[in-house]
Structure formats: C-alpha cells, structure tokens
Length: 139
Picture (cartoon, rainbow, N blue to C red):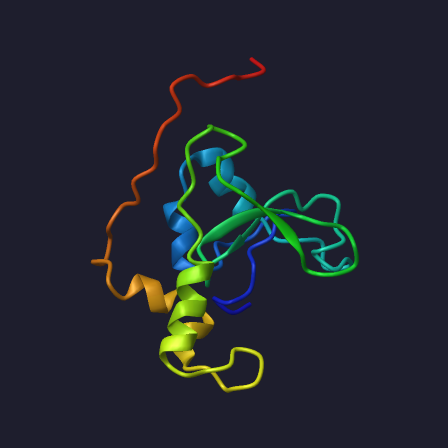
C-alpha cells in the first residue's frame, strides 16, 4: 500500500501512513488501523465503514456503487470532534500552480501522497481537533 491509497476499515493490521497516527480518537484510529478482507475489493467490503485519503487529508464513508466514491465527513463518528478541512481544493490549486494536469501528467512524488502538505509541519506535531460541546454516546 502506498501513502496515496485510502486507508480502509476491516480486519487486523498495521497503520499504513504516518498521518494515521494523528487521528482524533482511539475509536477512529482503531478503525483505520485495520486491514480489509483480502478476498474483497475494499470499496465493496461491508466491513469498511470509514476511509482516509492521505493525499487530501480527508475522511469519508465509502459509496458502494462499484467505484471509489465516498461521502466526505466533517466530524468523527466516534467522538464527534471536527475533522480537518479537506485539502482537495488546495491540492488541485497546487496542480494549477505547477501547470500540471492531474489526469494526464506524471506528478511529482510528493503530490502522490500526504508529503506535499506535511512538509510544512514540524516532525511529531500533534493535530488539533475541535472537541464537540456535547458527546452523544450509546452508553
């Protein structure tokens, strides 16, 4: 798995990208540290409930339509914290600034992962998440 690929939710396994270490809570982190069922396409695996796209620093719920679409979410389903704003628009702005067509041109390696936005962050920097005013829990 490369740093550009989404991180899926299902069976046991390792963290796939350094960005995963910086999620808002243990619930979300535990979901994203799991590996999908090897017999299923992760986008079709019903056990995959959350995906994380490191390149765009966005979280989403996969759409089971045979493709790789997802609904981007703004709040953690486990703790309710506000998730980071997607960097998708900034990534496409960078492609324009560099004069690159993301669908036609070969992209610099750093733009194929989260490296392009992480380069400005000091190593070991913790993310700041906005905690909800009230957490609704089934317990």
